[in-house]
Image (cartoon, rainbow, N blue to C red):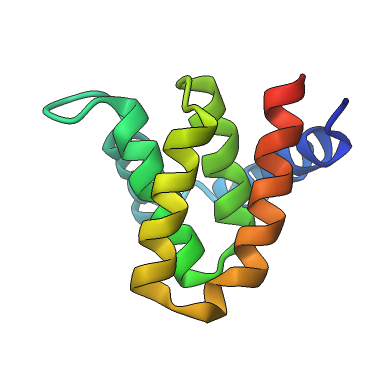
Length: 115
């Protein structure tokens, strides 16, 4: 199975990042760099940090963030069992309002796993 949403998401994200960063604003550039550095391996491995990002994104109900962290989770080797445990934490923290976002996330995770 292919995931047409992934290519569309990544293209759109890259294009819009360019729009934001072309201003050269120092604070914005620094924040983008800080965000990137936050997910690098340190005391916690990158895989765990991406799962944390996924949980936060589900709780905040940010579909773009969920998509980004799903892609990164798969790149870091997150299994379906690990995804399910992280999803459970998001549900406990965020409540039932997380369910619609979790449905989409589970489908996208399966798409990524199948490719």
